[in-house]
Image 1 (cartoon, rainbow, N blue to C red):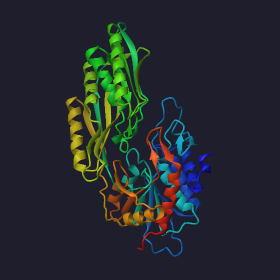
Image 2: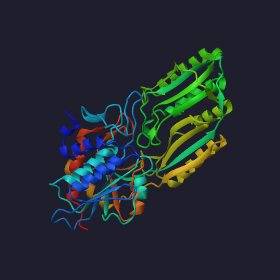
Image 3: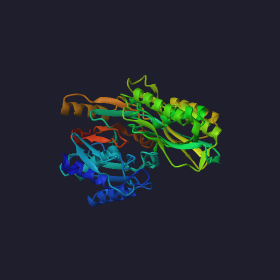
Image 4: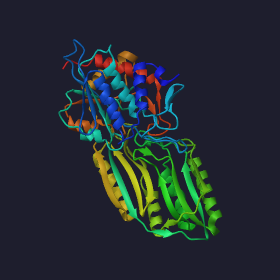
Length: 485
């Protein structure tokens, strides 16, 4: 069975089409073209704005012209993550999606259900001949994952609707009415490269790999390992106490993905090789025990490698690794307003040394803007003390919950009528585009929903098949019962 054989076939057909289009963030050109042609091919009013967002309008079915206008919103880009042994070019190759029992997943890469499934449902609404609905607009944005560029650059006055239904949350049976804001922090330290000694040292590659990673908002509460933090933890005593020279280090790839892997090349004094081996083995055992439940499959180990030509000047290298070691990571504070919700967190996403510059990129999230700003100052102070230059970028505010929202009341009523129980009303510790879009269109009544997607932003990403059908039926019914304007 292929994913195109699954029900509802119209949704899975459109999702399959999205898996065939390379669309990593900032490289969505083929997706823009496909979506534009999709709308035009249906004979619908279709518009591409200056930044590349696609807007498609479908008129109301007869007798529904007086209903409030609905905007179905999703983003076209996906997070390009793959396992180290997987050969895949995200700018050229299609995603290899397959059915695995109750789930659809991808072969060694992210699946792109975040947010290809939202796009698929929006396209299915446009394509369906048997739906009853008022005026519908579909807004599909670019570059949500790395900067929310499409949402930021959307101009006022382009959309006419009254209600925004965001299709980008990841647990069926939950309705989201709030989200966290975010802020990128980049720290850069300069260093001198020194010629590697010709003798007296043994080169090794230190590997931290096999951890789960995941979405830096949704999964931060799960207590999974951060490979960058573990790398600094293992390296620090080798460099400080055993004379190891750091030649290079790299870990993580994306600001919004918990880093799963990190790698370093070191030169170890010949006299201390056994001490270094012992220290790494001890750290590996301790880490295995500490993460035996939350992240049990990770590994830490040394392997032989070719001798590098240069190493990083020792004081600068140690200053950098100490700063990485001390950098806050994980949940900083839980919400007082909504039990179980993370309020403030930091993901130390990327570490990298190259060309005389050692960098760290973190992504902070908070539903409280003042808490986010204060946390940013904590991290600024840390890295400035270490001699780094700090840059803040990509900041955006959260979306404040409105529990008296009319669309929330409507959707709760419909869900209970369909399934016999009320949906959970939630806020999310992740950056939905609603916060930014609501600033441009303050009149919108907004809500977010979706099917059940596990481990987004990692090669373990998967979408539950049954929840896709349940969600599709729910969206159909909501469109039928949108209130009169």
